[in-house]
Image (cartoon, rainbow, N blue to C red):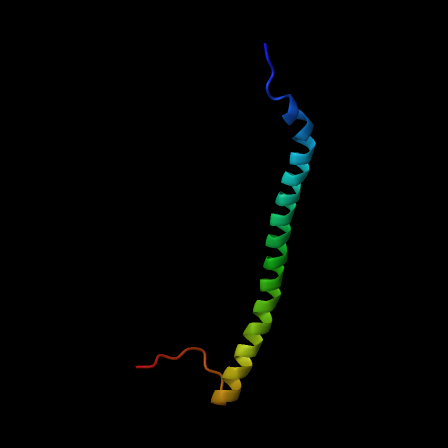
Amino acid sequence: MKRTFNAIGGWQPFFFCIGMYVVALFFSIFVCSSLFYAFNARSAAKEAAKTVVMTSGKQQIASINP
């Protein structure tokens, strides 16, 4: 019986390392972007609250413009 996949066995550790690198890269991007947007949302909300207070002079919860 002739074996045709002998050369692929030598590449298995290489493919495993590349696969683990891709998975770790994906999760690190996901975690870092989640943390960035979690902390950035608070500062953006503070800036929006300052803008509402400065422009209107009083705190306004909601408004409907006809």
